[in-house]
Length: 136
Image (cartoon, rainbow, N blue to C red; front, side):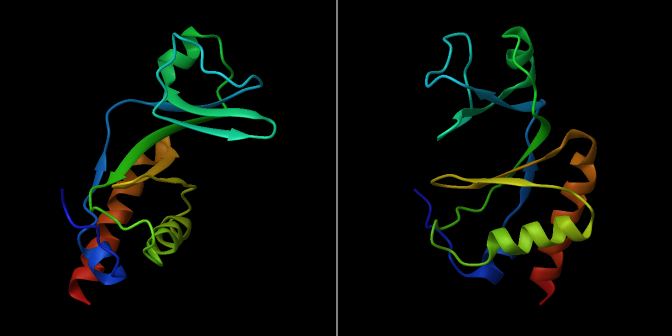
């Protein structure tokens, strides 16, 4: 198991963003359970219902309304869940490029969901941020 990184400069320099294949959809279910035919990559329970992130085709096949069509970028650095500043730095860089971003922090990596049409621009923006951190 790799060591979780908490130093912001090191996180940015070694984040190595990777674009995952496919298109993902954010969908909402009013009930509290995931239908058997869906295999979400993430779920979040809110008072209003259950939010899922699923492959777009699964959502379409299930007849679910797509709230957001996204490309999924993983920051490959093993980020510490208590690290300070990574989300802010990444969100700021993407915001300055005019790209919206939904961040999901998991146990090992941070995952960014950006509009499908902005995927390559987001990846280039993140790689530029990584390069600047390496030159600092």
